[in-house]
Amino acid sequence: MLGRRRSRIPVPPPEHANRARINDKIRSPTVRLIDEKGEQVGVVTVEDARGRAVVAGYDLVEVAAEAKPPVCRIMDYGKFLFELQKRERQTKAKAHKVDTKEVRLRPGTGGGDLEIKAKHAREFLAEGHKVAIMLQFRGREMSHKELGIEMIKRFTAMLDDVAKMEQEPRVEGRRMNALLAPRPHS
Image 1 (tube, one colour):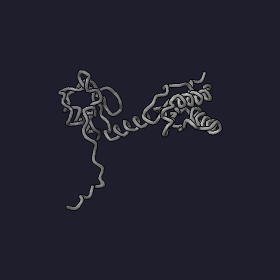
Image 2 (cartoon, one colour):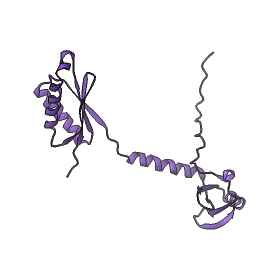
Image 3 (cartoon, rainbow, N blue to C red):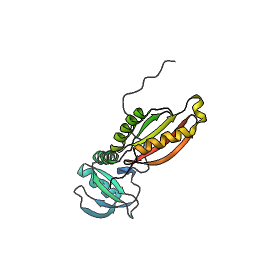
């Protein structure tokens, strides 16, 4: 059987329970109506409200379903959905996302290399990122985990003025991990 070609037409999102009901989907016999200008009309039958919406050329949208009676507004439903999506995008954009950058070490990492890695970690912390220290053991190094702990402590001591230890070193297989977070500015 040959593969079926998919349509390029976007599938409309499913009707969710939290989405506002419109026009014929409104179940209440009476509603509190707000007209297209934003003025409150009062409590009317749902048929009368639908008739006003049709005359105005808009949709009847239930904006507060839990109210007694439900509040409905005469508006352009497509524009209403667009505004909702726009607000959601703005709140996502404003959400602060913290990235974790990783610095890899070995128990035998030399002093000069350690200073360079500390300099990079300092830059990451200055940008507001967390820094994960990953120390890799190979072969017989596994029997000297104290060297790994000492290496991580030496590394964190170099960054003590800009970072605090968020997660103490812990061993996971052949790796030892620790996490540094930027210190809050005073």
